[in-house]
Image (tube, rainbow, N blue to C red; front, side):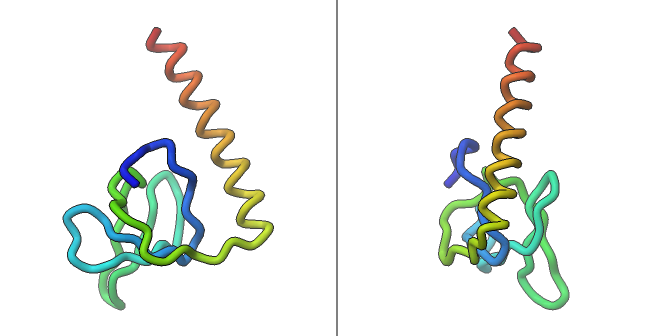
Amino acid sequence: MADTNITLLPIGTVIKVKDFKKLIMIYGRNQILEGNISEQFNVFFNRNMGEDVIYPGYESPQEVDMREKVELEIKKLKRNNENVTN
């Protein structure tokens, strides 16, 4: 899962994150992922820190549509960034 080309994971997905003993449930996505490990602690991490998907979250039609739009924007940004650095 450390590949940065992976698709975005749906809200509710439970993953194993590098250097964490507890599993993390994704509950938000901004520029970084937001996860919950207990009532007192939340964790923020980049998607390349995920090691394994333990349980996939629910994928509604709205989730799939939003994810496709976001991934398209990410690809555009990567292409623009590559053009600037070349």
